Image (cartoon, rainbow, N blue to C red; front, side, top):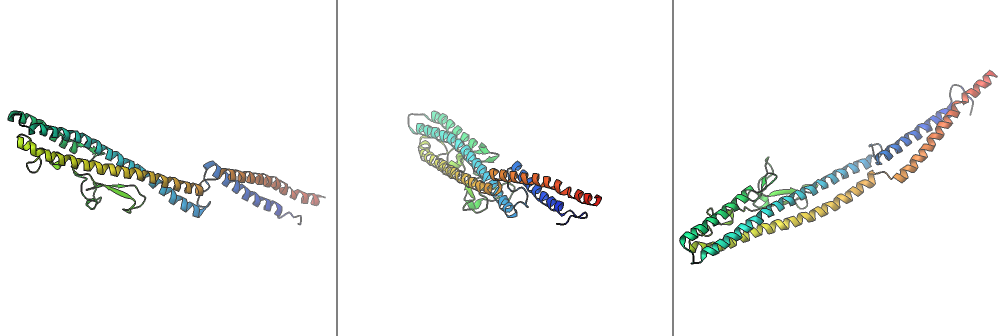
Length: 298
């Protein structure tokens, strides 16, 4: 290579290598400081696209778990209220049994009936007042088949749709929670009941007829609780499944996105040495012009 003044090709070549090594060193520094292999689209365009899809999937699955947990809390709220209603129905049957025997006078049966009606009113109060996050659970608003659900308005109607999946396919992404009304009239007891059976126990005949209605009311209430318990178990299994999906998707996203610290530290050290070497050589290459000046001066 000729010794020239206008161009110092050694310095230019060394500067180019220094620029490349310094850029690689900056990339390694960015990866080690962030913990991510992909920080910009330029790092891995295809990998970035896959990673963002997976990140969205993981966030959706995690929110689905929270949705399912909220639904379980709602079901537990309804079941707790039905447990109290259960106690009232048992007391009402006890009162009906008491009024069914002939050893009580009409005045005494009226007193017994007053407590019977008070229990019925309390059942209705509990059913109408039990709510979860402002949603009434036992007044019949959530009753009906899944086809009765409509979420088109600001407030959904019909059975509650609990969404936990990342899509909108009924087979895998949501459940319908249907809860029949549990007011006294819905259960067929108290003054609001249709027909005469179960409406009152003010006479011996009415009290005897009320026993069958109270049995039916207890069975109806137990069916509601059984359906809620089955749905709770399904939701708990769903949470387990969603947790496994989220964990595995997170692991896949990590393998694409996260930096291998050991490998990257090795690369960082390599680029650091190359950068230091290039700086030293550039200093030497920049001194070649002095050799030409020495020849001219000589």
